[in-house]
Length: 405
Image (cartoon, rainbow, N blue to C red; front, side, top):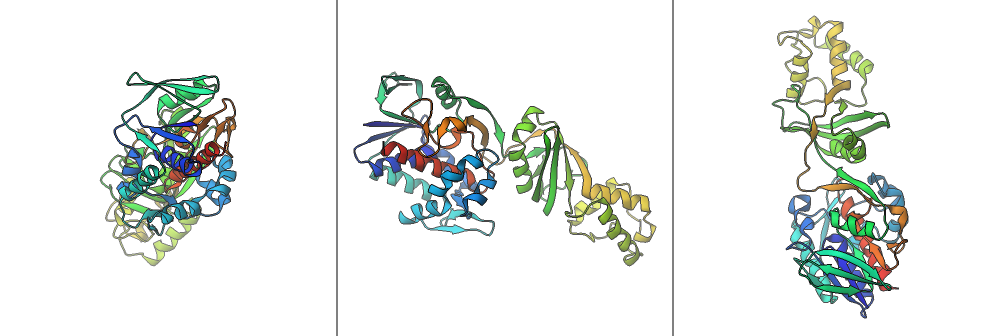
């Protein structure tokens, strides 16, 4: 029986390996349009490959997926980060967990993961074909016929689409009757041109809150925020971009966000703190140092935009200025002018509608013999190894589903 996997990324290769290892009778072929297999694995994690995340409870793990989390609950009981670790370890890849929970190969080199996957595929008898794209897919008499860019036609009994966010994959899925949730970017930085941030690139605040308000409700994320040359980045911003991906796209990335640089403080509680400092630091200049947990340059910039002269001492600070200062530090409003990129790790929100897939086998409920895995599905995670875990889990399930039929 012939199996074709369209897409030589993490999900496609992982599915092909598992499928071929489970059923030696199958002839498994992976078709990759590009020159290189696993190209996204190569560049991920700054070239180190963030394989997965140290989170072993499915109920907790699904919280890291803005879309698809609930659907993955059952899938994660079958194959989760612990299984990913065991799989790579059994094949001689040593992994390490960093303090933030991200898991990398000890070599800090994504090539280690690529070599492991390609060696495993070759050993399992998977045929790997590059520079070969699929132009047309047909389903006739329970078999699939694929027309390739080189003019050839090939047939198979089972077809797995693991094309990531490539439009061709969505086109094939639609051809077989599947709904596509419109794809929009997820995991990106925010372009904000604002005098409060100018010249402060490289400064980070380890614990800040960023909030996006819309007619559909409020999205808030807390964590490190990094000031960049073009605006804002850092874990809290990236998470906000993931959870707010659709809303931001609908507004053409022209919305405002509110930043609290000092959570859990609010304007009133911070005002009380500043009034106490007015007494305890009476003769000192307000601008001389940051009495709060803020980088000195950010503190000085906020003093400046609040209109407090550099020579002002704490005792000279009016209640009105204290009110303004506490407001700016806990409820500063910034206008987004567009989205930036997050390194090369682009992630897409949207894809094949999840209710149309059997998540025990990853087979289509609409077209028998058609399977899906990875980012072609309407699933996306935040940064930290969660998108790869989706690839490993859905790839493993698809491989097993195909092999056991």
